[in-house]
Image (cartoon, rainbow, N blue to C red):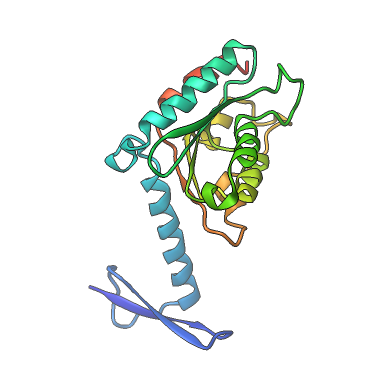
Length: 213
């Protein structure tokens, strides 16, 4: 049986009718605000599940670029740096730039792969062009890199290893952990930036296993 509830938004004087395929008896009454919260929770869960299948068809177009970013991460690791890499791809699929983490070799805590990439990209291309590009990162960008991506005007980000799975490698009491998915940072801005990931997560995590012990 289908039931409907009306959700009143006093501030805007609007009524939104939400329809759900859920059983209900005729005498049951529902709290509109509670039902709307349930709706939002279910929608968020569906979005989370959608992004938890990195090898489905919707992500296959990104595999070769994520693999390239992972290759850059492996090169960074070989040089004694942290295993993170990133690449910039234009609208036609051409790789424009590659970047590695340089935190150790440059003795610079801001030497993240994505930030290094954004700095180089900003020197070479204007913001209008960068809005048509995609940044591929071997691991989900940290808040610092997400901010740089926002200001660069790059409008699409695809990452391999998620923050959640990356931090699962650490002791939860580690003081260097900063829980803040890049989506939470970028959603605070007034420009729309598409975020896709994780993609090839099992491959992306390999360089990290044992590295942070």
